[in-house]
Length: 222
View 1 (spheres, one colour):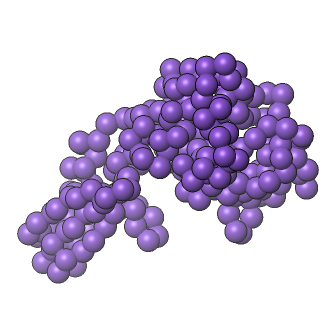
View 2 (tube, rainbow, N blue to C red; view 1 turned 180 degrees about the vertical axis):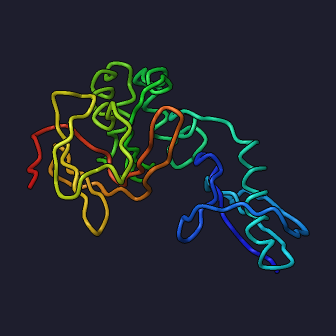
C-alpha cells in the first residue's frame, strides 16, 4: 500500500490532509518506507508512506510527522517570503523600503502579501518607479497598508464586512468574509482576494492576495 500526503515546511511541517484532522498515535505499526520530496515551485513537501496494513497507516503518519517536525526550523515572515519565488517582487519592495528588519521583528504581524502577478498588474513602470530611493516613503506607506500589528488567522476575521486599521494608521481596509472566502477592499475601491490563508510564521501570519492594496479614499464597507 502506498499513501501520499503533503506537508508544508512553514506550517511547522504539519501534515495537510483533506479534513485536517488530528492524528492519534498508536504504538503498534508496520512500515516499509517513508520518502520526503519537495514539490517544485511550491512550499509543499510530498510525503510518500509505504505501509502494510490499515493500523500501520496512522502510526506511519505519526512517525513521519514527528521526524519532519524535528527537522523544521522557525521562520519569520521575511524569511518565508524570501524563500518563495512568487513573492520576489514583494521582497524587493520590502528591502527597498527598509522594512525587512521591522518585519523580521517579534511582531506579531499579519501581512496581506501580493504575489508577483499582482505587482505586474499595476500600470507599466509603477513598480520600477516605487523602487527608486526618492520614492522610499511612498513605497513604505503602500507596504504598511498591507500589514496589521496583530496576528489575524482567517478564522478570526469576523463574518461580514468590517473596517480594519493597518499599520498605516491613517488608512482603512474593508475586509469581507463570507462563504466565498475573504476579500479586501482598498483605497481605490477595488477588491483583492485572499487566495492562500494562514501561512504561519514565528512572528505572525501571511495571507496571500491577488492584488496590490493601494491607499486612498476610505472604502465603502457594508
